[in-house]
Image (cartoon, rainbow, N blue to C red; front, side):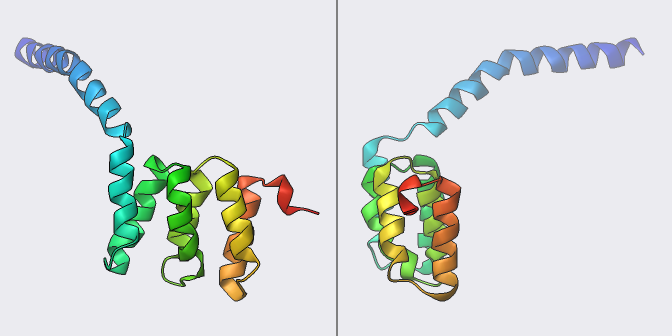
Length: 130
């Protein structure tokens, strides 16, 4: 029983000692430099396959800014990538994203339009309502 207690205490001490390393690494992972955002944007504008572009949209939902909006907006008309682009645009703050979604909604129909309207609702864009 004493050996088991010593093992647990040692494991706890090691975990506590290593905890600051994990926290600082997590903080580094959430900070993306603008040039990294540009690399993500480059994937969207390249001939990358749909799967790569979808994952890139997901990453832009976390790390994207208004700089990514003009590159995400054209994807709203793509049936394979529209939902991924909307995920990113829903997360990017600012009027640029609101305007891009509203503008795209004017030319969409069917399920793509429904998705864009849903995103407008999620963002709470008051300018979308007359």
